[in-house]
Length: 152
Image (cartoon, rainbow, N blue to C red; front, side, top):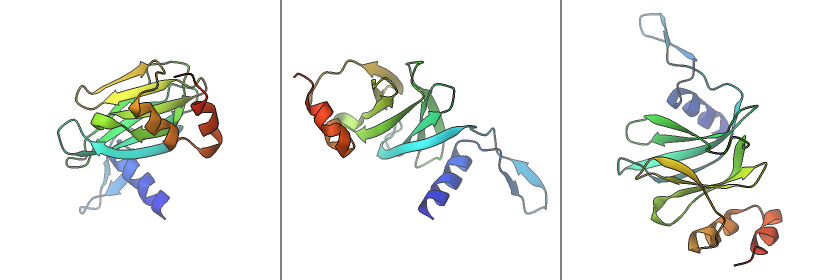
């Protein structure tokens, strides 16, 4: 039931073409749908406007993945396409120090960082810092040993 609620929320917030019946009995278009995209993970954190935001990582079939940021106060959403064209999605998403959102992509295991104060999504080199230690702890159990084996 929670998944259904989240999907409905995403359709409305991201501009789904789903129609709603207005009180006058007419249908009203509410935007363009996101097609062939699957939600892989999400995290709440500080938003660009200073309030709270929900950050969602989407896999996009045959296209580049993206991060969707929804402002909790206004419902306004922004889509940030991954800066690495080979990546269709990111399984891992976590909130790091300073309110930055980190994503671990598939298929080529790039590390992305979203800075809400700059509203910028970029790729970073894999250096182990206090933030990357949080990423290791957020990784699925089967990947933790591999991530811990990187030289520091």
